[in-house]
Image (cartoon, rainbow, N blue to C red):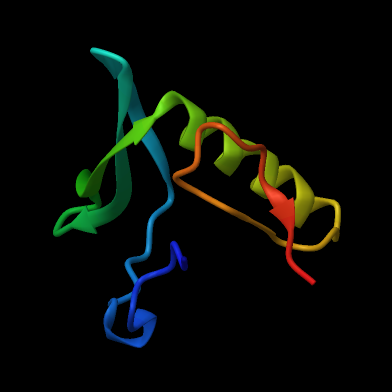
Length: 90
């Protein structure tokens, strides 16, 4: 069974500059993702571009994936299965 979106090409990319906030909501974490822009008069504004709710296990898997990407290692898979650790894609 695939855990990927059925058509990822229809998901619009959203530019973001960072995480503004991480909150614990029950057993999950809500991550608020932001970017900034300048209003007229060089006034900075922070814009919320997404709020995502992640399970503890999926958030931990995302951290492992990020570390792998930063180190040039293969991308990992198997999100959504809290019983298994992420496995390498071949």
